[in-house]
Length: 144
Image (cartoon, rainbow, N blue to C red; front, side, top):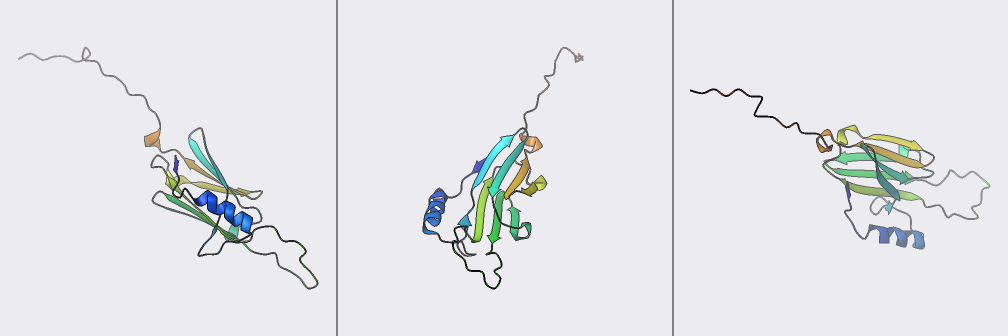
């Protein structure tokens, strides 16, 4: 149901993690995700711990899903001295090409425990359906 748009994206993510680089608006970091089908729904889960819902932006244009988020440093008060800072800060982004078989008009988004979960229904036209077979014996023939 998903099509990867950049095969080197995972390598960029690993390099950013190892180098400690934080994402910027011009070059955002990649956020980890899982994608799976659950019945008639496609589910995509993004890891965004420590990000407020106000800092998450979800857009769909045609079949391109874009999720952007920003994690800012916690407000520091007087007398606080940072001893260790390992949590990545900055801008995170992920683009996913959705298949035509998904109903992008009815995407639902939930955010709980640092995980953004999108539920995208399978389009009715893409679901399997039975085709009735007609019978010629049920029709009257008119002779002339």
